[in-house]
Length: 628
Image 1 (cartoon, rainbow, N blue to C red):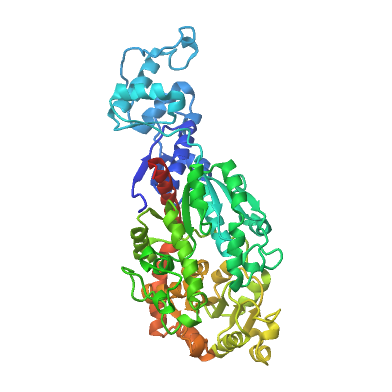
Image 2: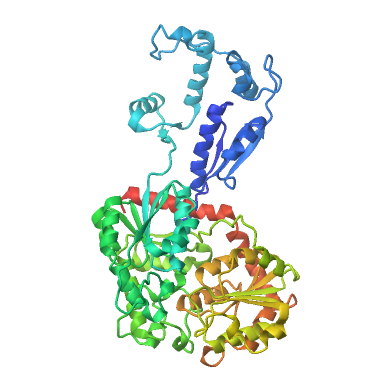
């Protein structure tokens, strides 16, 4: 659903009692993606700029107020002018001093109050004022009132009847009364995107109740930017035989045991039902609790499946046309479903045996069948993507499920206001602009020692300075003890291998960083698309492979490292890929750079991102109100 192209202009009476309510209305309209031009006196601008919450949508156009007769020098607003001279202020803005006669107002006011009410105790002034307003009301196309039916319905109806035109009510412009709940899969790769969406919704006045494992709460509280609107509800995760003691999230559990974590999640059903039963939210966002749609229906809530991975993966593996069963073979699983909109964003036969989950057909089928059934049962599907990169895949999903598919855009958090920590900044500053290759594969990817060492040797061979941030390989507690023999001595200060968390967003913004070697996780994908770095991809998991094909084959903004026997990344192949994109004379490197610049100019625009969220909220409200 496209963003509104409506463009509105505002021209209020020259008084702060009018400027501010008009600006409150503008902020509410801008949140929904409308462009607004606001005309006001030049001198009033400094006092109002701080109240403009959407400067990317709301543009001020200052007016020079002409001097008229007995107005004080420099007078621009009602606060600069004694009340008896307000007529002259009106003349200053309208460029006229004409007066009109009129009959006395029929407005019912007690006689003994009239002498003390400004305008009414001077019939000529009062008549002029009301004639001006009545004339404006007659000439306008519609009347908008800052009120509501609950307190002034009869009066607004009377006005509509008197002027024979629409009388629209804005309400008091309070924040949205929508209340949504969030219940993501128990993994930080899901918690964080759900919380980013929660922050964006809270910015627009929605109340959010966020359900998550108790142990995950401390790591997420600092990412809650609106604690007055976003409330966490911790869940006690039941133990399931086979899980490590105290395991609550995917990071506590090896990938082969994730099925047991799914069972633990299902066992939270009673807790979730109690919480949601008390809260009765309008909407429940979820992605893995297969019993959420039926629970939401019983509570009178709308269920929305919110996908935080790429749409192409869902379109390839999780649609009814795929026809999966528990007996589906590997060859059948990697066949695109009928009508699938791409011949290049696919999983290849020779790589399938090496991709986790894909290489276990019964388990892969069980996983995809679960999600397909969830998608069928949900009321609405929401995708963390946009038409600019995945439009055909989104349209295919909507066609397959015959229900609304809403797009949130990337839902990127605000760039941290903090500076890059000195240890990173000082090291990166040693190198020329755009010369450093940075590598990270996220917290889910743990390599075997042999593959880890081959990748480190590839960075050494490239000749570029490099910062590698990976988890220690299997069987090692630190990254340093797994490095190739003599590696640190040969590389010296040109390379840094780090085994812990890094401030990736800030590192990608550092001018010395010119290449990002990534696994193409969906969050990292959006981060590199809005960066200035060249992109080299080494995907591991199914959605990462699909995302890499989208970036390389469809958008042509990156290159993928060629793998060798047994899907191993060789040092020569990695080194070649890094040098290819870093070489300013490389035809392929310049091609992907130019394509990347085009997409970055779109995706890095706060205006564009806010438009996506504004449209998403509008669509939510429309669907709720229409009873779909």
